[in-house]
Image (cartoon, rainbow, N blue to C red; front, side, top):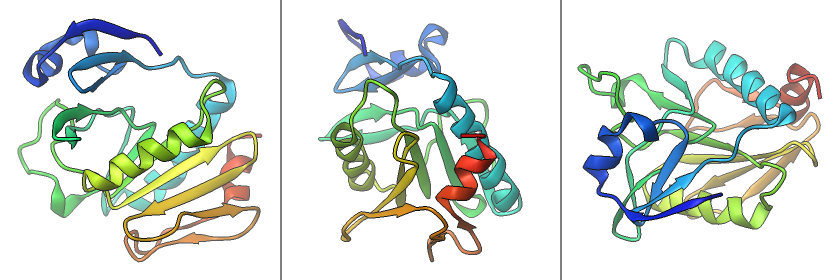
Length: 183
């Protein structure tokens, strides 16, 4: 990931069309997101399909939708691979902007040059910023690790169902996700 040497304010970052979707803001630095590879893209598409089928009447599922959070007392604008925000938490007048509330679910798919430790650190930051659940998806090991505040992360594989009171009615298995992705 490339980081710019220039510091940018949250307002300037959000107002710049050149930075939308391809970059994240962390501690005032603009960080370029890595381009997706095939397995990442297919997994992201599968998750969108499966989560959208469940969440259509419950809220909004977004892909690469920036979200305004705080990390270490500084503005943070991550761009999760997939996110879900319940309808009752989204403002009625939301326009074409970064998500203004912490998601109920943020999903990060590990890219080839990223490690699980790096994604764990990001998951912990999401939780500290108020995100209810974080899923870290590993296409190589075909697992989904679920993070929630105050609990030990739980790794799901095979046909073990991911079910969660924070996401009522959702039941997915890693096997189902990766089958849908064609992996």
